[in-house]
Picture (cartoon, rainbow, N blue to C red):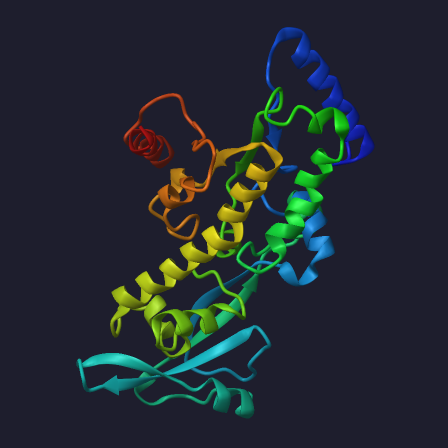
Amino acid sequence: MTPYLSDEWFARWKTALDEAEKIDMNVWIYDENSYPSGFAGGFVPEALPDSRGMGLKFEEVETLDQLDKNIWYVFCPQENRQNDNIAYKNITAESKTAGKLEPLPNGQKYLLGKIHYAPQNGWFGGKWYIDLLKKGVTEKFFEITLDAYKNVPEIQKEFGKRVPGIFTDEPYPAGATVGTYVTWNDEIPELFEKRFGYSLIDHLPSLSKNISDWKKIRHNYHQLILDLFIERWAKPYFERCEKYGLEFTGHYCENRWSKTANCPVYMAMHVWRQRPAIDLLTNNYNDQSPVSVHGVYVAKFEN
């Protein structure tokens, strides 16, 4: 009804600010046109089409006549004599050359790693959710959203006063929006190997199956995602708010704890806020409701 971040949008904002002054209330900036935060009502993906969120999903097949472009990785089962477990060999290169997968002996199945993209729909302004772990995406979000408020003198002069700060709502690593626990982009394998000293690609099946040293591999993967989420979203947001005299607050998806896709360690994210907070999604305690139970846990931890 009111185009996001338009002149009309800020005219309504100034009206709200005037009324707040009359009745001595504060007005907080909500950083999105819906949620999850980061896509700026569709303006970020419009400005950065290659920022589209991706997730990696695993699928088993016996044969395949054609490998489509979204199949990034192919693994073939083989005996692992070191631990008598089933391990997988990375055969991506030879599979792409052949263009198809032939039947395996004994009814064994290939394991495919397929890329799925964040869906395009009206919720995201006709675009899609973005990858906050990619360099430059958060900065583009600041440029479009925070700077739009900063550039309205009537609002900017109230930063830290009548406009105490800004509320963010459920920003995710992109895989959660795609519906997979494995957030993915081109940079993740390189950063993983540099950080932990071994190839994530060769161990990708352990993100899907309880094989090899899967607990260590998954822990390392989620540690990397957490560190990137802090480094490329939470910390820059904190610093930008510090620079503008705003308090950074809001809500990560702690009500879905302990699903690490939504936020690997939400308590770690609170360090990078001037005002740590949660979103009270229910007003009663019900031990059958995950949202309610997790809300109680989070409030207890916060305290």
